[in-house]
Length: 165
Image (cartoon, rainbow, N blue to C red):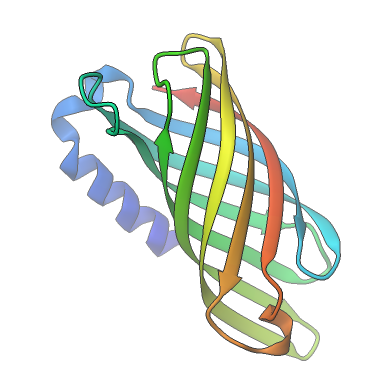
């Protein structure tokens, strides 16, 4: 998980090093509910980069790493790389759609399982003040492994506070 975060940050910083002064980096702290077979709470941290061109409507995007720790008796972590398309980037209310790929690690008693995932998300960002936004979203992820524990998709909803710098 730490390697994924480090590699992603290195790639993002090297690709966009010339544009650091335009407040395109962001970090978000989130709290949400997750459901596979039963509901449980989780916390997540998102770190990423906005890249957009105000002259091109379809180029209003953000790419980020989302690291989640599920609150349960098990060791349960989800790490995802996500790409969102943001509508109305210059508006106070910004709806978005996105795709994701990720990795899940789950360990409890005799069960020790990890797998890759793919999915999508949708949400709305609401600007509170300059550089601070409220982010509300829902996501759906499906595991590649067909073990009993991963047969159902992972559904989640979250609320977070995002700071851009």
